[in-house]
Image (tube, rainbow, N blue to C red):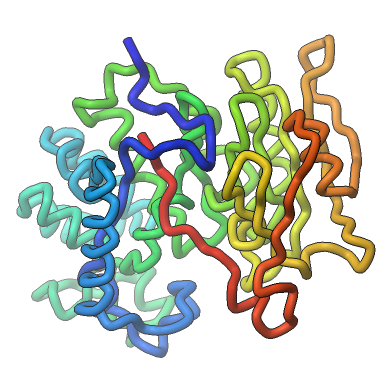
Length: 356
């Protein structure tokens, strides 16, 4: 049986793309909680939805099948047993423990909804004003009695590339770096286990969300059937990359990982914001990730004869790409023409690349 996951390129023809349409979670943002939510500004929901719908229609006009994360999750939660287990874990990971009276109150509140409505509510968050006659929660009171939410919203969930990443015929279900986003990858874990299109497909999970060490999909780039580039970044640790190498080597077609160290800051949080494949031999690159002599720390991971992982240290990006992609030439295109003002403004930040 052909796997529903088939991603061996950053530039191949898309067949199916997973999106998540912005919803009420954006209306639940306020200036006071932007830092907590890892958001820089408050998007206008009506315009955000209009732009996202236009984006989806543009994909569909190209013959690409568009699926929505929230729909896949709702379809995975038709069973009351699965729905109960999902809510229980979500609340636990939100810091609401089973011995807290609020746990059962929110459980009952969410279970009273149909799956599609419940998923939208979980993403939007649950405001204290929505729950009538709730007893005070000790954990909630200890944190901030004036905080408006029992359950935080998930305004970043529409960045569907980060919570998980498709690599070959399998997935990484990622342990996100910051608490504000960690619950998001529970969605894809649930989909792979319980959605009718995936649950019986025996899809490899190369690295699950319970591993130690952080990793996010924006750092995972599939250059070809044998080579990955992964950013050592603010959001992805070297330990996680090594774990992934052990999982992939000998169990997939991939035999090389180019671990590229980029600055650990919010402006360059993921590799795909500063290094993007646009053709088999062309890449855009933020010029300021390279030294004045155009060098950058690169660690080449490959399997050794004993089944372990060997690591070579290199620093010439062009030569490394030529060597491991077996190309005679590589064209690196500096963003913004390498201008110190224009280059940061031109950094790319793909919303999706979940071609299932």
